[in-house]
Image (cartoon, rainbow, N blue to C red; front, side):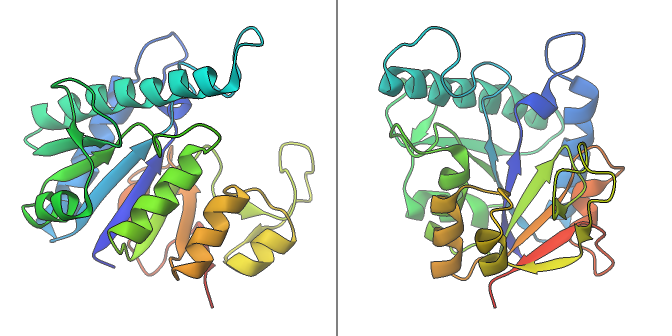
Length: 231
């Protein structure tokens, strides 16, 4: 595993008192720094749920609502990118639309060039189109840059056969085929993203962001989350 796309939840980066959880983001930066030192190529997609989720608010036009969500992801990427830069990590923020001088337009060649330079590349703005989630964006970018893995850092420590918050007997999977995940409708990622991963043979690792050095742990043989295979 050398080139990965890491998905972070915008809500997970938010502190209970409001505002960004800087301590958590610094911990992420420190882990990413260690991975870069090992020669790993890291790109990141961040959700926008801390600012805007789905059709938040009044029943406004779906396209406009989704555009607000895209901008929320850009704000998150700019903030996290700056924390990374303070910790001596070179970054680039790529978007699928022109965003003044704050980001650069995405292209596969540019993304790979930056990754080969050792930069962390943030894929902000989703796919640039309404009706597609950041799940779809991470699967799309992973396919485009030929990533070895998608890492899903969540508020839960893996994939379960039912909601562990509602079912105390819920069983966690150590490994799971992506076809089974789709068949059982486990909702780890949305259907469009699942199909993209299947068609492009991109496995996933699902784990809790809150665990100590959890991102580093996703690269270890004794990984304790859920590995979703494409075989």
